[in-house]
Amino acid sequence: MDNKVVLITGATSGIGEACARKFAKEGWNLILNARNASKLEKLIEELEMEYPTLKICPFLCDVRNREQIKAALEGLPSEWTEIDLLINNAGLVIGVDKEFEGSLDEWDIMIDTNIKGLLAMTRLVVPGMIERGRGHIVNIGSIAGDAAYPGGSVYCATKAAVKALSDGLRIDLVDTPLRVTNIKPGMVETNFLVVRYRGDKEAADNFYKGIRPLTGEDVAETVYFAA
Ligand code: NDP
Ligand code: 8X3
Image (tube, rainbow, N blue to C red; front, side, top):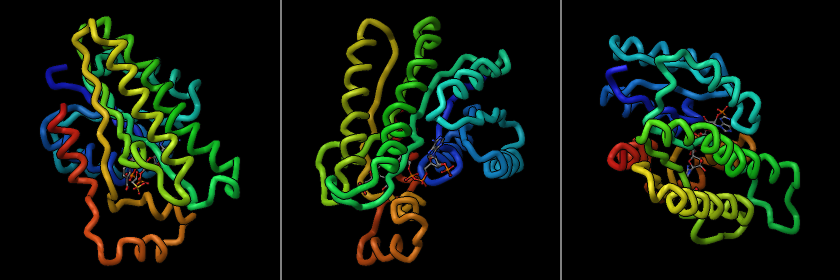
């Protein structure tokens, strides 16, 4: 394949979608992950209309399901297997509950997605990069990984884990040409808060009152700069 290949997890919303649009604009070929097939088809159709020469490959799976990830990777057509850039973006927060009051099931979802999903993607994609002697892993962390805040302890812990996993991977790859970057945005206006407030759009909008949050595009610019 002539152009570079980026695999983006959680590509149908917010930061992931903005990264898909930015890398498409810059002429990269895209492997786009989502767990919702119809949302992904819609995005791919739109990008193909806008960039007719662009090559895009769907990567349908839930990043919490390592068998699905493995099958999706094994199912990639041969021209798509040489991934240059992995953007581990899929992630979420649910609730603003105190650590002694929240739902263990919701915490499982956050931990399984933000930590174990990222780790599974890394474990399965990086060996190919090492073999090819090139590659870059960009993890979408957060300032929440540096400082905990009220009602955020489990989410913050997952992003602290993303920092440790990024630092550890960078050390483990020190004798290779591969690169590892942890991008740590502050508040970004996406669907993130709607998910946090369990679908309450008004609560999400109110949160941003009087503040000018970052946009998904701002973060995508930063990811592209790093790449
Ligand atoms: P969005 O809710 O807009 O997007 C999250 C994306 O992740 C969606 O496409 C969602 O898919 C996908 N996703 C969630 N769970 C899974 C899963 N199990 N498997 C595959 N895809 C999944 O939020 P953001 O764009 O804001 O969030 C992206 C990343 O940025 C997250 O890691 C978040 O922690 C991080 N971040 C966000 C900040 C913010 O203020 N918004 C600030 C700092 C970091 P679906 O539509 O199917 O749910
Ligand atoms: C998201 C940023 O500050 O809302 O990671 O937790 S914050």
